[in-house]
Length: 603
Image (cartoon, rainbow, N blue to C red; front, side, top):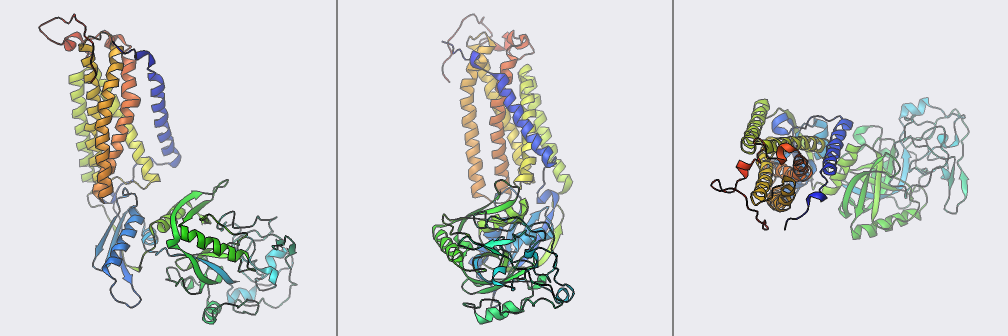
């Protein structure tokens, strides 16, 4: 008995879903102003950096350490396997080739060790240059919080934003806030902001609350003609528990000079440490690191809820979560500035917020005026691990494409030629049904192009020659799905189904099983190849897997519903000679008339 499935078909709705998908991809391209795919190293060139390891004793690093560094760098530049970046080892050096990136970007991405430490702040001071101390005088007209030096009085400790109030002799910063904090849970709610900014451009409240809830007004010093105390004076700093050598290093540290900010320094987590703020506005004495980067289980970039500010979200391992809870508890029960916890990356303090309560649960957020790119880069560095060695770039070169436009055009021409042959075969053999194949391949091309462009600008996907080969191979895979469905329709009509609409529905039930099995086998093969391979082979596997998924989308959302729409037209329903479904072609045996009706069997 025939299955009455045709009345359940809703081809119009299915086609609208496909249209919505195409509009969504096209809208993403338009909003991001991304209209062309990004090309890989072999087609567009890039930057090549040679890194030389630096060891404490000057000896050659062990082989296993170098291999671990190669794997970490490869994860950083090509963690998804689709960016077409290459990382190789040459002797004791590591050679990194990144497509399309600038020299500074590559060095920043692969040259930093990404050693993360969480340290309690023991002392803090603002950076002041001698010239500014001599020329700047206190201004009585400013708000109280903008005229208090960190060393003026006990209540002039770091504000709720994790930064000290600006001294009158300090340089005037930009008024745009950087928004540095660890999370909304780490920083006390800010009160009414003052008219002037702190050294980090943070708005500070006019009063500060102690732990008993009482408000303590911030004192305003009386303006005098004498200059403010210099940054090296330590009478107001609580030196209890601070190593004398570290304190001496802190007093001598001039963070106004970028060379002294220690970017890339390998600090010992078991020792106290004197460090600078990332922009040089503050300097710190930091306790031993109670939580380190190896305690992090995962890191990801995201947008802070309710704002447009980018941040890095951290999840700690079980041991790290316990250490993090103890560290925040210790800071919470300490007096300013020891109620702050500094986040130190490669020897530089990127933020040092106040702790307003113990933080259990093993989660934290790092904010610091990040952009999407900088937040993603930091998350990748923390996620893939710190480099076991410090590296110095020994050479930096901008390389041109290794294949060039001729090879690119050759690949595109070969793909177009193969596509033309497939379309010609479909039109000659299936006649009117061949139009369905042509339009299906056009839809597949549109989906593939828009997907490649969107992935290129959001996931780092770069189109290289292996990717193009994978896309060309997929043409045959997509055409095979059409042929399976067309032949099932013909078989149903040969078996006695005189109405095309009924044959279309029953043939689809049987054909989709074969299509899904074939695509599943191809997709599994692509996944296995992508996981086990690296470089160009992984790129080929990714492209093949992507187009296999697109083939399923096209067949389900376009080919089948479009044929269901065509089945309502007299040109196809009445078996016009050019439809590909005429009686001559549907005759089961040319020597006999087809006046019998048979019951179709399950495929």
